[in-house]
Amino acid sequence: MRRRGGFTLVELLVASALLVIVSIAVFQFLRRFTTLWQKSEERRELVEEASGIAELFAEDVGALVNGPRGDLVAEWVFFDTDGDGVAEASWPRVRMVRFATEAELARLQAGVPAERRQRAGEGALEVLWAVMPAHTGKNDPDRRAEGLVMRGERLAGASGLSYFEPGFFDAAGKPRELPNEVSAGVLWFGLEFATQTSLVFDGWHIGTDLADVATSWDAWNRGRPDAERHYWNEPGAGMPKTGERALLPRRVRLVLELERGDDRKRRTRLDAAIATTDTSLEVEDGSRVPLAKGAHVKIDAEWLEVLSVSGDVVQVRRGARGTTATGHERGALVHHGRALVREIPVRLHQEDWNL
Image (tube, rainbow, N blue to C red; front, side):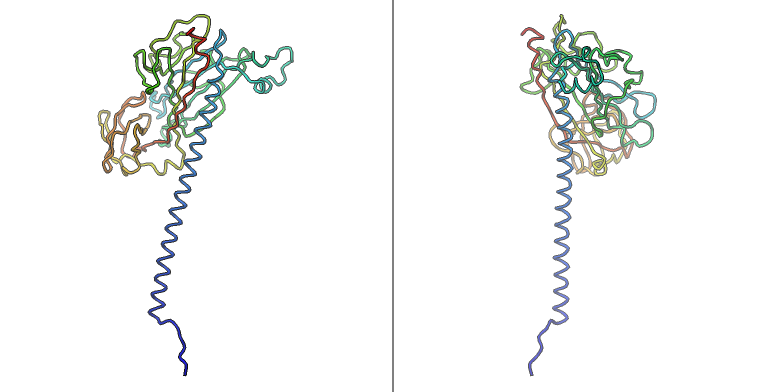
């Protein structure tokens, strides 16, 4: 009699175990692949968003008016974000006059009689860039470090309150007319301006020497940036005297750092409170602190430069990026984002300074 072939119970158990092991391995591989793909997509979207902001800002700066009608004011403004009555967070604000394109003139002059319309090549816009706190008050402290980038535009010389009028901003630093929101989740919107004597080919250095760059600008040297509020509002060294034309920088450098809401879920927190003079931080997970050269983290309104990371202990330089070192409570979120740098040449600066 012929014997029927088949698997024994042991062979079935071994095959089942192997199938389970292979299935787990495939599942783990797919999960890691999906996670990496998702992170890559998030980074790509973040870079695209930052690039879009930088491109829009570069278009405005590239079209600056340098004649008697021109103007450019860049300053740092303080805001009270934690609701204690003391303004501790600083954000930049830029007002400029730029040439208007034909499409912009048509859009902004819709309904204006033809004889009163400005013509392309002659029309100018007032443009406002302002970073405002995304959240203020005692609630939701994790969002107090973030800013909203706002942009507004209006025809220069049109009726209404000009962006350059002192009364356009209230005592709290808020504009009378709210501009359009460009992006949320901004951690850093850094601006630097190359003066007539700045040397930027070997790097941009903020300081008071002739070779350094400025962090504020006043095209007519009228002292509009308030240097008593923030030392970054002091005029740059080597600024020439004003004449009949607006003074423009040679180049402008924009540094952007963004952080999404999903990014905050992957950030670490302080594992112990720190005082004003502390230069080391104990965090819950040191692997979530950026280690790249020149990396910065933000806790509340203070920026800190990362020097080294050993386990869950981070060595830092306090009060970076023009901020002030303050104490921070245990559990405070350690923010950081991906930096995007854009250098913008100002083509008309030679005519301004008669070089």
